Length: 288
Length: 288
Image (cartoon, rainbow over all chains, first blue to last red; front, side, top):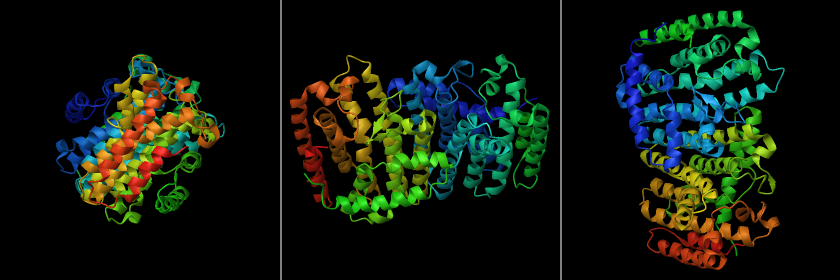
């Protein structure tokens, strides 16, 4: 299964923006080093790519929106650093390399995460030059925060020690821990282009949940080498996943259903949606 | 030594705003509880008070600026939660109560901090309704981040294991760890009132460094009961402070000198500066 053709265009543009940004970081050298280490560890850059793709789909000038694209990746990266900490998921590996706290120590990793979230804040304030951009930054801040991604992380942590956690808790975790920051770039693009946010919200929620479901399914099915992280760890750590709640076969069926629902959301959108249809296919069928 | 008379007016207004804000938190209950626990643990609320006082001194309508006042306190509170973590300062007590991670566990404390920083981000985006308020939010974000408070925290942590750390490192830590978030509310008020930021920057830097110097001096001289935290801990943990670098007597002399410099900054300011003169006196002479 291949990524949509234009994925590489958006990704290439973002990598160049990110590289220049990392080169310009003005924090104390050790702190900048920790921030760069995780920002440049690779990854699919799905959030900035979604942001650029949605702006493009709405006919907006996507290449200009560098600050909010960086803000999205800064937030995602900080969340991975804090999530890997011993008091959280306790992961030693991330994308095949030592996780940030393994490389730089726990205190420095906490601070690198704090610094990256603060950078997202600074970049968004800088971008807020008109009402549409202010609104885009507000969407991002809200999606990342106590009623968004952090709420999802909190519920995820709580579920590990709650043997009664089930379908309801799972849905909350999927929607908040992952889908919030997948739908945010889509809604932000709608805000900037002056379009309705609601349809992108609906599509992005489906895409985000699908993304996390397939990730959890791959944790069971995938191979260590191709994922670049410790596999089968979810079950070992009693993580609440769709595989644990539904079993593998039913989880796969639900993922298929959700992929169809996501594609249906695209039908009534006043935008070029080919990229997103291809992306849904890819996310459902990827094997790594 | 008494606080300036109007301190109580600004403080009372802020406490009411904070109480209403805490009551309206919509995060998952356990997460909101952790956020409220630290937000409502007391403290001097010096950052929002400085913000209100400076707005008032410039003749602006200070009572309306609730969002940025809350954002300031959210950032200060998150920094205390993360600073107390075992991987950082490892403090079990804060304001006479168990620190956040002692009360709620380390993972939840990391998330409560992340949530509070995200709240500051959300509140600032919401406040950015015109260019002056956008600029105020940008000042805050920058002061809190990788070139501000987090840089100071990083340097503070690094200095603990650097036996060559001295005057230069101390100046960097004082300016960034503490003074950044003391001068930020003053500069934010200037931005909102459409005044020059530079003079408030200069005064706020002096006030902020003075505040941290007197705090470090009190750590050596104060009594455990009146400070509500573990005393003499700085020396025990090899913290880089003005007492360690200069000795107590010379540190006291430098604090006096800095208080004079801070007051001199006020002389050429086009604002009602009586409150700030009184505050400098108080900060220098307080015994708790």
